[in-house]
Length: 246
Image (cartoon, rainbow, N blue to C red; front, side, top):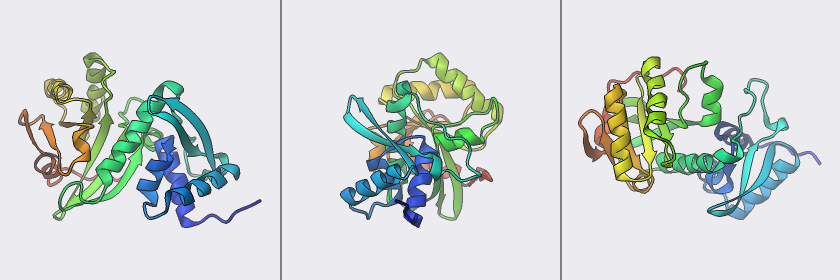
């Protein structure tokens, strides 16, 4: 059997390629929230059968999950070789997908319009040796200004020294975009902000619990205080340069 790809199919395949691996829930929220869940599941299974997607099962703390990645027929000639998370990385990759959904949902920050996003696999394909590649990049517009967040999802498993090494890459690359760390607790957020302040990296940090709320509070490295995201991350967009990757 051969199927005719729709625009929605192509967007689903691209999202799976960009993220490296994604759940049905993440793909639906990012690409086609108006589609019924069971309808989309059937289409994803068909795309897997036709080798446009690769479907695999993962059993973790949240139970059994079906994950979708770009298949051999789903890759364009211009696409980089797809990166997929290892077994040890899958839980982190799933958390990144859910975080992107939260950060790109309508009304997340009043007046903010998300113009695009890229996942870790896509960002890895862009990065030159030694350059940082965040877990996600989100571009936005707000009040006539444009900006981007380089998103790092922290599940509390990395040491401060590991975070220091990661942030040093941002310092060396001299990026003008703001690092947005999404972590487990407010205490952890404050600790990551302290590491960034010590190094000199522009970072704002919040928690996984807060990011699902409207206009969550973040720890702002510039002031060392907790302020709404609209006052920290959005304000930076007024002076930050927009990358050509937008």
